[in-house]
Length: 273
Ligand SMILES: Nc1ncnc2c1ncn2[C@@H]1O[C@H](COP(=O)(O)OP(=O)(O)OP(=O)(O)O)[C@@H](O)[C@H]1O
Ligand SMILES: [Mg+2]
Image 1 (cartoon, rainbow, N blue to C red):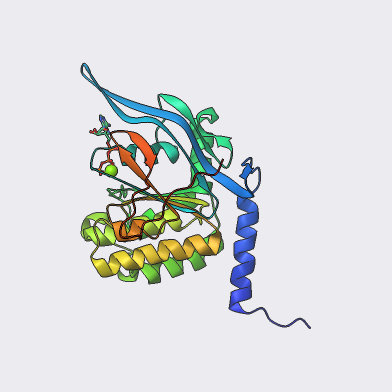
Image 2 (cartoon, rainbow, N blue to C red):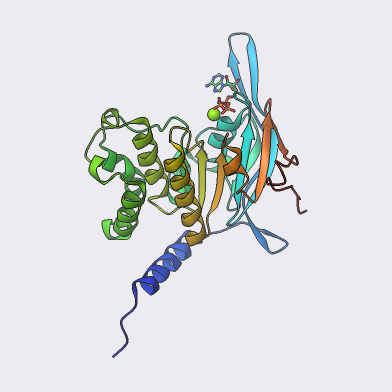
């Protein structure tokens, strides 16, 4: 008779299985032994309003490696959210290419892109974007429905997210019946429920008090470590940016490695070619 598996072993086996499934048709390449999970090449996004053209993202090129935490800082209106939406396949650029796991987002049909996003990408929006007539629980489960997942495949993850984010007693309420911070936490649970390989978070702690903000960052970093995820986070909070492996700064649509250090706390930037 085999010894019973401990909970830890079961968790590890489940994560490994999910990672195996997630890695099929992985077309990403390696640089110095590190897998490039996201790459943007000269991405441009312009908005036209009457006779005015706003260049929200201006030839942005960057890479994010597997299991890396990249922070993006920058003043309001500099193009951070626009860039994140493009990378998450929620919007198409006017020029340039975006690759996730080596897959060119621009080459996918809307259906393919929808499925791809549901499987590999999690997004925490700056303004939640919860579906107003869905309860908190239904909102959290939207990505599982998109990928037609069986309940048993996400039940454990759901329980853990609900407990960590402290939203157990709000699950059957509509977003309009939740506080801003609770809506934010529901949005974070929705982004993580499918255990995606790549997580984009647009000021995920913007509506939270210090304690809740710290908990949320902790959860994002723990999930990242457990699943070997890559995390790209826009933040105004420099103490959070200081925890990132690399920090970029967005200025008037231009994305640049940020070399400035904050009392020696912010990491410098070394681009490996
Ligand atoms: N749908 C749109 N139509 C027209 N202009 C837009 C649209 N979305 C964004 N913009 C403009 O693009 C620029 C970049 O906006 P974006 O939301 O990416 O900035 P941001 O860096 O995320 O700012 P914040 O820190 O305030 O969230 C801004 O000038 C904004 O007004
Ligand atoms: Mg924004």
